[in-house]
Length: 292
Image (cartoon, rainbow, N blue to C red; front, side, top):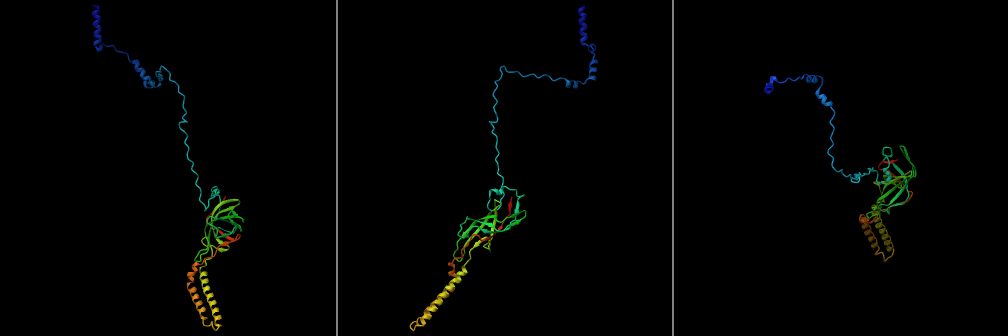
């Protein structure tokens, strides 16, 4: 009977919600009011990391390989610095100065010089001749003293030609030696042996018209000879008959030479060029020259 009563009370307690036990949650409310659960989670220490499972047999250490031998260093190509273009002939020391600080000799400057060698139309193209200054030239910050040397190259030349054309030589000054230093210049000859030179061409005299006059003179001289011959024949009673013949011949030859002299002069040659050493010349700069 006691067992039956106890079992009945237990079933009623479990089946009726009103009869359920009421739990005391006041403690939980007090904890929530005083502590922030989210901050508590942030202040908690981190969990220890668990190492992965190690293999049963340790790996064999391999020797480290140097990467320097696998990737050789790259070398950059070296580009040479650009060189200024000054004058005609370039010398090695022309590229070793600062143009902004160098002393400038203005183009158009003229130098009185004397030739150190004979200058003639026999010189071939590419031959070189030299000159020496005989008078100082003063520029700003510098004076080109007497004794400065200029060198020129023969650009063109020929001997006297037919049609009365004379010899020719063209000189281009391309270097100057000053205070023991040689630098390139671009200059020309404006006077040769105290005579003006046009277009840098030193030319022998053209003798075409001289050839024309020479042909006329030949006819005239021949005519005079025939006149003298006719006079001698006229003194002889026998030769008086033929005395007019030489004179008539002289007249014909003289007329032919006079009329044909322009054509005959084409076969004459002009004058030679031969200027002795020590002759005076004039050199004119065509471009600025920088001293350093």
